[in-house]
Image 1 (cartoon, rainbow, N blue to C red):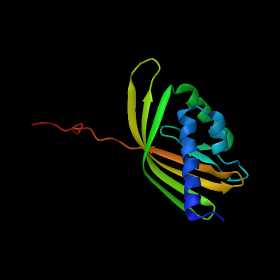
Image 2: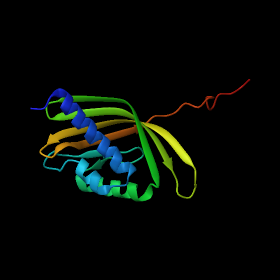
Image 3: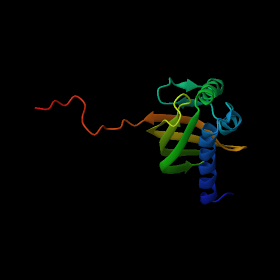
Image 4: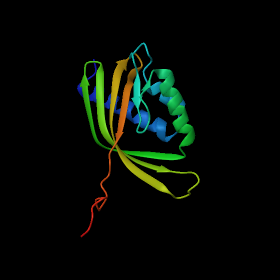
Length: 149
């Protein structure tokens, strides 16, 4: 039986593989990160600005599209917390995202997203069951709409 520390490390590694798959455009790794339908029924994925994706086929199709159209993306994860209860684990974190566009050399855009990733312990190890990411609205230095007298 694995120690609590070993379980936490395994969940952290599964979470890291998810972000590595996105950063490297590795759809095969992404497929191995997500659980199979028989291991975790009703797989769901919510990416910022996207409709709810349900089921492995729909989720993999969406990740294929994302990976084919993103030239560069890097995640710096902060405020990462892992909770484990039996064969379910929850990872919450802040994704600090950097992206660049192919037509704008040197242009890098950033944003922050809060995320909840649910994992299930399978025969192949910890696999993603649900990914839910929501953008954090950044405050401007000056409030828009404020009228100066």
